[in-house]
Length: 365
Image (cartoon, rainbow, N blue to C red; front, side):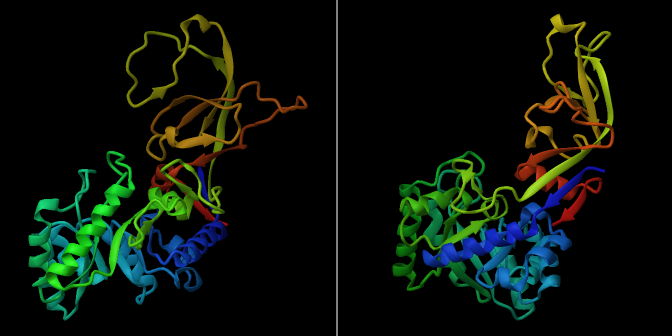
């Protein structure tokens, strides 16, 4: 069975580093754990008291994950990071202390659910700033806030936005400044103080260093930087964060010399995907290995082989074929044998899919 190896201490150190970093810049932050899909073993190993003590909240986009967080630590402050479905209002109020919202109809349902259990549910209202995903239209914003302020069991704690996720709209200073101005307008018009302007994500982190965000942007929702050590803005390591936090390891289940070009009439494979081959190489061969995972587990495009001599050949639902080059070490010895492992560096999606696959083993180190 292929295996995902999770470097627990490196991840914990990344989270602690970010907590200190944000504290230095007077920024609150939420740790977003959705890449782990509520995996209880991960939650138990990583979210220890010393790790979460300086985090404002821990968030996810799945209610089952928030439920697992509360089961692990009932006092942990949780945040639901996508606009909730109205039908799940009761569960959102039960498992999330805070939620991000853009629908007044849903917020009314949350208010009713919170009232039923004598609870006040906190919300951050998302504003559309050009990414065309979730967010209230800016022209409707004042009326929207006025209606929400009238709800008895809803506390509005902030204004927020999502940028750089669906269309890749950059979180520029001018974009973020709009949120600051709206926050001021709301405060003046309704005599309400909003605690958070929530516009920071992993993509925004380098802008803090460059002093390219308004000073009152004071809440970040961070997942990728904490777990992978990089910012999606440039896909580079951020500060001193560890980037070697995960490794994907697969077993060689066959190793043979085979032709490069397939034989027979070529049609569309059932679910197979192959590299481009040159028909001029019809009589040439290569040393090929079959590995014990496939498309149902991880997309090969989300993995990078640590051995640069290895190249992709083809993949089906549960097997992947690679070319091992000459399969020799620098001193001329055979590099790989049947039963050996090929190691890869997985990206965010590879880790997420691996943790969702019951056919991939997980090992915490």
